[in-house]
Amino acid sequence: MNKEEILKKARQEKNDEMVTQVRDQSMKWTYIAMVLTAAFFSYIRDRQGLPMMDLCATVSISVCVGQFYRYWKTRDKGCLLIAVIMLVVSIFAAVRFYMGH
Image (cartoon, rainbow, N blue to C red):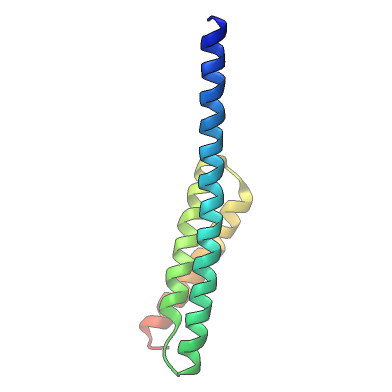
């Protein structure tokens, strides 16, 4: 490899790393926005006496899937723990929703 090929490859790797970091940060903000929005609407629905478990189940399963994917790619046990917890929460919320709560 000559100098130009090495520089080109280094720039490309830097851009790939930046894209990955931006995607990771965007997913973090997506999760935060989703959880906060669902919490707000759940609160409003609860105050009106309406069932809110569907929102809880939706958010929980979304976070669960994302964490399982991260575990699959990184083998980070923290991601697996969060995924399992969110799976249990989503099953609980779905059962409560189907029961009419």
